[in-house]
Length: 194
Image (cartoon, rainbow, N blue to C red):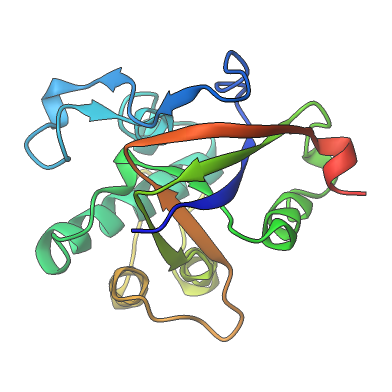
């Protein structure tokens, strides 16, 4: 696969220890419990958030809702698209800087201005329409305060469409980065979204 530059926003400050030219391992965290369905026995920071740091059990309804979506996306991947690596093994970014800007601006005023943007050189990746995630908020809801959440077939359909590569009417194409990436540039958010 060709190499390309992908822009990643580091919302957790996890890449701040890396310098230009350094290689980043996308799955640096040991997680042997999940090795039966993941690629290898390591997870990315994204995977760790949803598998180990609360996820479905989290009190934050936004994280809990996304964690459930991730579980369904993983189950659909395992059943119908095993040729793809897990999202739990990925780092995420955007090929087009404008797509990353749109993603960041979607946070509105809550986007911390100390986030950094990293231009990463990658060669092991897939691209999917993350707008499939947005559709789940229309009809598939986590009921506030109710531990018995409900989902309908729409969620599974959108997970299937995500992995199949079907785009929504207004696609936002994310790049799932696997393996390793090379840090090519570090940009400050303030400068990036001018």
